[in-house]
Image (cartoon, rainbow, N blue to C red; front, top):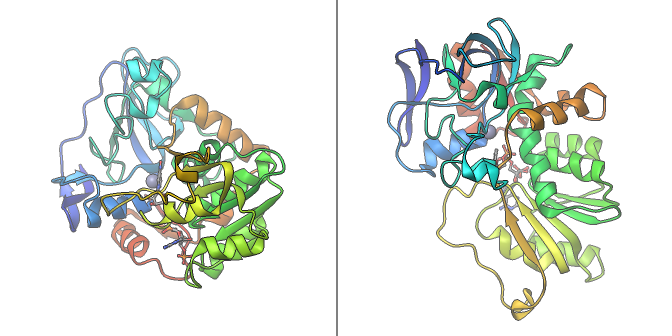
Length: 351
Ligand code: NDP
Ligand code: ZN
């Protein structure tokens, strides 16, 4: 079979591989549509998770099941499915402890394009099919379904990590496709004021539609100074981080009220340390919490988040700005995600 792979750090291309083998609990699927993630960019060009040779990229897609193992109960060939980017081993101790994302070690639930071949291929392998796949809801557009793999669960996880409450003032740093989902989740959680950091007009327009009230540019000086000015020095209750770099945490701590929480989902592609400013952290006594997480995966989560789409509470159409027809366009879409043209939010390739 053919797949679009990371050949080594900084180099990618089409390769031929053996079709994956289906275990008794597994499924083999073929993509219907795939989306490119900023994480593919970090992995390939920054080498953020280390060297990988001839590893097929991609972890966001909507797919059709082509084969299932003998113990799979709820899926059969021909079923159209939602595929979470994170596919935990549900029988692992980590999953039983409540940390399914880290089953098999830190970030171990993230298998596609990390520990095994990803979805930019003729076929891909899904472990624990009953626990990880979800049926594509009737009427859901496969393009929207790609956004369900990672952008929805990750953006929403930022808000879960920050534990946004009714009436909170929230700062969302980064309004690419992940941050936009965080904005929407803040609104659904009942935030009273949502400030968003980002400069691409196309993202700002969608952020406004999702519930952002005001915008801050990280290009106009420190974020914290702008936030403190707009809140009469009080700061915000919560910060969701879906953009920036290792220095963003220092800004976020300075923006927070005592007792506030930071929920990070940004994948820090470079830099060795995250610095915490001593004074604004209350000399260690501010009760400000920093929490960073990988999106939870699995079937129940997919089904619950998808129900927000089918009920009309979450509109995913706005997230996708570029749709390509044909798998040959995957390289163009990947390079586009690296270069981030000003009119881009998210590219999807119909396979
Ligand atoms: P984008 O690059 O599309 O968006 C990044 C956002 O951050 C943009 O709004 C950008 O502004 C803003 N930004 C850039 N630099 C700064 C800065 N110095 N300070 C503050 N804001 C800044 O990214 P995505 O939305 O696609 O992804 C966001 C992150 O989430 C990535 O790191 C990705 O790898 C990660 N991720 C994490 C997952 C998880 O499970 N934890 C899963 C999926 C993705 P501008 O408008 O100017 O471009
Ligand atoms: Zn992703």
